[in-house]
Amino acid sequence: MRAHTLTGLGLGFLKLNPEKPVDVIAKILYSVNQHHCKPPLSKKQVTEIINWTWNKKIAGEIDIQSGTKYIVFNDCAGLSIKQKLSMSGKLMGKIRRNRSTEKLKKILNKYQSDNNKTPTQKQLAELAQMSIATIKRYWSIITSESHD
Figure 1 (spheres, rainbow, N blue to C red):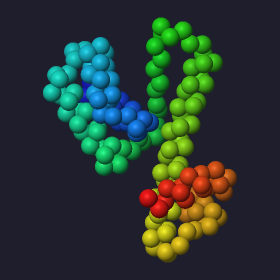
Figure 2 (figure 1 turned 90 degrees about the horizontal axis):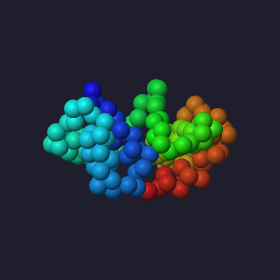
Figure 3 (figure 1 turned 120 degrees about the vertical axis):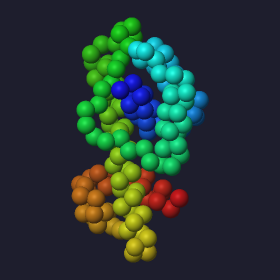
């Protein structure tokens, strides 16, 4: 259970913070292990979790499944409920936005490779089973990155 929790924490952090280097995730996981795991996992076990999650990030294979997510706030931070809800909403919005743009990029790239042209926004909305408003919102993002 401790290893599963640390792995999930590492994957979630790397998914939401793709620009962070490996030493940042290492510091976080070592700290969580030391202060919150009873008894703590061995340094070797935590290092294996760090290496595994980092390799998943490098391979582009981090996929956070939908389901119940928990956001934990430090009680000493003195945040109000309104502040916590605002922060949680922004975080969940980022997760949804990333999930949507990744899905759209995959569909767009597949369509372009199969048909040798870019689909219309309406075609992409039908293929992705998303609203045209969602496609319009992310169109400039996904079309500029689809040629990387």
